[in-house]
Length: 325
Image (tube, rainbow, N blue to C red; front, side):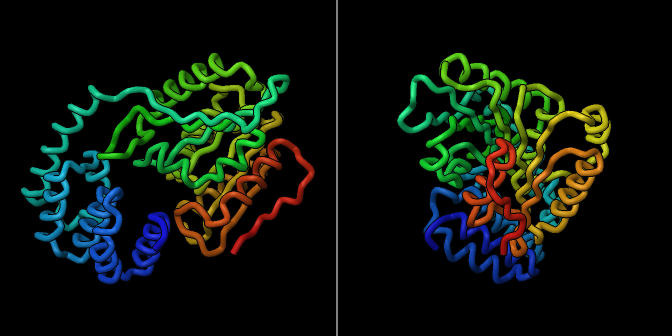
């Protein structure tokens, strides 16, 4: 396989179909070919072993990963249903204690980090919109930015990829603490606006994938930043009730919401669909792009769908395709 995105898509597809043994064999076979992503592959391997009730092997793999310096947050492991078969074991609890010590050490090392891309061939007499993209949970700005056709986007926009200050694995960061996340994103944007004088601060669009979509929507609805619109990429919401008072308070305002979702992302798709309906009920403008055969991953033709969302938000006269296969 040419890239790790395809590897993950195959693992997730086999997992969704209940083909755990096949998924495990695939992960074990390709581990040596993707050394950069060993942390994630060890995690998938341990999950699959636990699901298959191979408890001793699952514990062995987790400890092997720790010995190599890989780790995942206590919160991640405690909330991973795939580890239910080993959760009560003494060995798993010992792993949790080891990770607590790692987390305490890592908290002292975190520094502000983000990627900023300037438009190609900047016209000094022109002000450019800026797009803010928040990475998924347990990801980072470097891996996330690879999903984007940066050269194409840089023709017309500044691109900002803020990294969460909350480290939750060897190479992953998450937006688990909302207030801390809001503050960091606002401070990063402030720093960027002060440095780059030809950004149009009236034309800021915020977006995010999975957990990043949830945090970015909260920022939009709470008006923590003056934004032109929101793009939710495979958004991950577990509950919508907390959003309804915010939506009600904003009725009548010119807000624009766009979604890129997978119909096979069963749980999250249903909630995204419900959210879109609630927005329509309140007479907000929405664009809901569905991918018929997509689970919880970024679609292959992501670039076209992203530009559809941008055209919708900025009001460019273009047909907005709503369904992909």
